Image (cartoon, rainbow, N blue to C red):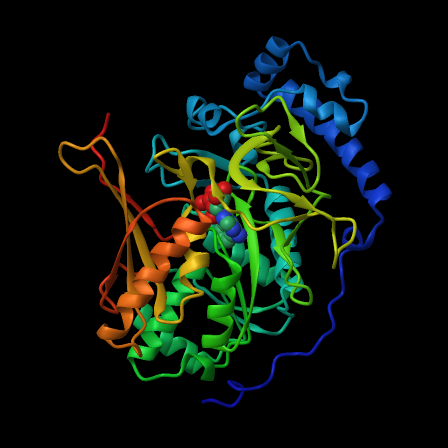
Length: 444
Ligand code: DLL
């Protein structure tokens, strides 16, 4: 029966949360009272915070105004690892309603927990983010974020449900099946990593399906860095509006910040629940002003199971004034993570810079990877950009494109590199978070 399958989604106008519309002054007053509560709560309930505050010579009563937050010590992934698995939980285990964890590929997994109220707040903030990005109650939402310990799948799922959507919990992978379900169920919105959406679009084209012809109108993309050029690529090939969603498990999961579809100018940080700061990544004692580039730091304001004080995200960005939600500051695009930065002969380089440059060259596709090598007997590192040509471009047509890419990287990034244009479909496709860097240098 297809009776209701193509029924248009309800055109309900967005009703905003009260906190989305309050003034900056009101928001900062709310932040201060929540912050005072959170630091005292963390100090009283989590031994690590008590120890760190005592060592730094600060007490929760020292927090009299928002700027006082800078006196408190940072929390890092290392702290969570040392307290593995539950040492940073501020509530007894029976009050923990759910646990998520990072994959732990770079060390011990980091474990995070949520009370029932934390889960409700999380769902509310994901719902708020999705609504900002154009999703409305009654819409069908195809959720291709991975389900499981990763916060993406279940976090996005609960938010879409809380908004009043019909959720299709497909998870990541099984791309052929995703395409069948997109065609049969006719979802209005898709939630995925940007590179996985690219994989889906690419696979559609291979099957002779025009990705611009599906029912999809909105995409809410995050969990990895992406560029304006990638937005343009996805919006034009799929005929959709693509917005950003940001978050990290240690702070909550997806929905720490979300982008408004009417402005598409960066994600608004939901500052009624998180207090952001930007610090100098190399000299963390320096808290930087709005507009200045540095490392993003978050303090949770309402979390019960895992309050987090000044968590160093390693994400590099800057804070910008609110637009569509004036009281809530936006974050600029994340250029990369400080631990994902390639230092090539003294020059700093991020994969997103290569994405930006490559996508401006019409012959080249968005499918690329970066290989770092140190050839035998040489002391200099080598960067090779492997990038697929567009299907429509002949092999002969790509030689000059390779040269342009090489020159543009030299001009804009300052690095010399080799560019290898490879056949369409020859590089690994994303299933979620895509690995762009292959470091084959001998370990020191
Ligand atoms: O990736 C949470 C998430 C799921 C966000 C789905 C958005 C959508 P983690 O696995 O803990 O959590 O990874 C967090 O991913 O510190 C950033 O480096 C990166 N990241 C997340 N969102 C974005 C984004 C989830 N919109 C880490 N742009 C973060 C750039 C992002 N990077």
